[in-house]
Image (cartoon, rainbow, N blue to C red; front, top):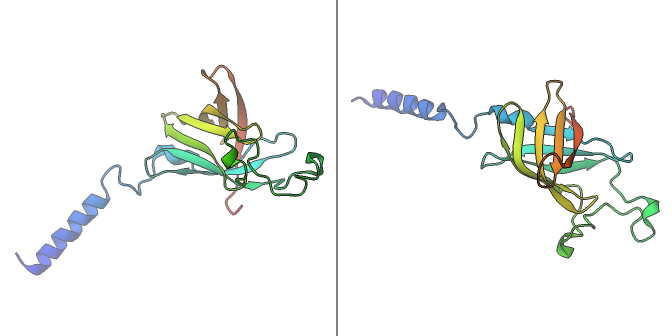
Length: 166
């Protein structure tokens, strides 16, 4: 076989391997949740959460921005004006973690029909972790439902996609 023929066969083989279904760089239907989301305002506060696909195919999200990043004066002189930290975390060793950069969503997997299940969500305002599922609606909003035990006992918040560029 000529050297040129072997080179062409090698190129074709590499292309075929790169195009196989499930290749790591392939965008999946589950990636519809990927992006930057604004949480539903609560007491005038809201955050931007970036959701990304992990190497294992699950989806996780972390807080990347807060509209009120510092504790207000009403928190008293010990906290007023300082950047918000995870002070209510049940683990004392984690109470000084900054809220900005905090991973709050873990382990979601796409279940079809624009639903992601099997994940957990952490609420730093309460220091609690809940089971969670997310549903992407036709209007582009993300319904995030945190619950204890079964989905009937929980709370849903509505998140809106943020235009890229933060």
